[in-house]
Image (cartoon, rainbow, N blue to C red):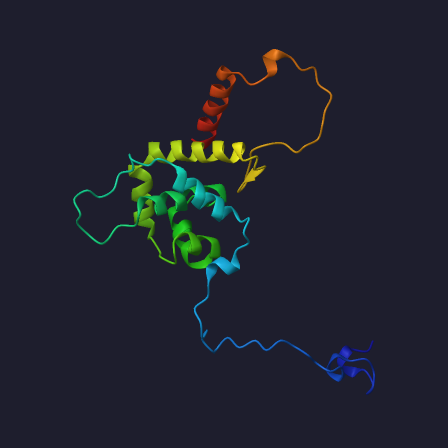
Length: 189
């Protein structure tokens, strides 16, 4: 059995073909700072998450009122970080901290800052009710915008039509809408 390297001279060989490769130089630093917005498509989930958090009325978020210690991260940034990471399936505060270094979308969301896992955990602990309510509101906004998926969560079924026996009772009433919101609350918990 002939091996690839034992082929007679003149046979088809990768080394005999003219090589045209892109020059990869990892040792030269970037001359211009990269713009993370160019690395994310316009319809990326992180853009929706940022817009949704900006539209929420957040007057009850708790921060360090004493003013001691290092500068704090803005509450909207922390809330947006939690909501985006929850939607994409990252729940651990250590995994979220790691994502601020490795995930381009999370780096864009945090403005290339890196909250540590203690800060993320403490924000989550202090603002648990507001975090849950905000996540439900973001999911409700996504449903209103007719988004089919919000991260790893499916919000609506596809557009297939199925024969059904429609009735006035199956239409969404005020009570049914309240039940759907309650269901969203339970799923968030």
